[in-house]
Image (cartoon, rainbow, N blue to C red; front, side, top):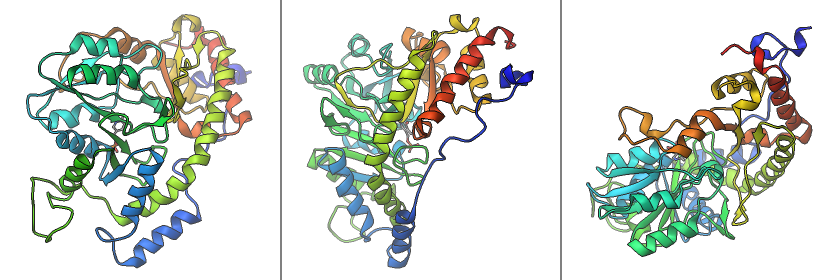
Length: 392
Ligand SMILES: *Cc1c(COP(=O)(O)O)cnc(C)c1O
């Protein structure tokens, strides 16, 4: 009897088995971690950090990669290395993780919020154009969900106005824009290795760039201002300790080795979900863009239309979907809605994505088999059928 009711109001969930857990590891992580432990070099001077930096730079089509404590730190030191000064203005999307804003604010920079494109949910170049002024010095496009922002249009604006571009690729390991991997398409890019990210060591970050000069300054900024070579107590600039350990780098090497295979599995999972969700009226799989030659699928973001679900608000739909055993989230709030961040007039596409439309499914779900993904479709259909019964 109850079986047919949505789980949120007492029925049996569609799915009782968990989706693949994350993070994952095997003997390789164990082996390298133990090697780092036994090496006696737990911080500087070991082999793992340099090896990972070399291999990750190659993986992202960048000349340099520099490890640091987190993606948040990576944003901050990259902006600083780019020479941005207090009072300079950077344009960021309003639909992003909070660190995209706070890293800039911490350096005394002014931030201006651009709206997002209604289909890609990445920064809208037209909205960027409307914000340009004399003080604007840099753009921070965010490759939300692992889908590259429109780097062609952004580079055109940057060239016209002499602006720097820092790619927030925290979610976009391995993603490609017109055949080139993200991270050094702009002047620099940043990545996160936080435990939810597609390549992880718990906490960590990296800056990627093709510029020898930027790489050099970033090296120093994360190393209390030390020059690359020289005595230990020599400090050429004002820096901080933003380093990570050999343990983290050892795990990252093993994770990087797994990345290509996992990317293929996520590609297949996303393709399957596209087909399954396309069959349901009232939800819409993400629109494709030919210029995105590789999507990193850190998130699978679909559009929810409450009117097809008896006007069930997105927040309730997300709760109901979770109760059916499908991991999901309502995603970001507009950054300007936080009282301690700079305000803005409401930006229509950001508002729509946040409040009514965007539903996020985390990447580990895409690692499941095709049959397991059918439960996502079943759960959505079940909620839809009974949506009028779910209390608001
Ligand atoms: C995760 C993330 C960051 C910050 O990375 P941390 O390693 O958690 O500090 C920055 N920007 C975006 C878009 C992210 O998803």
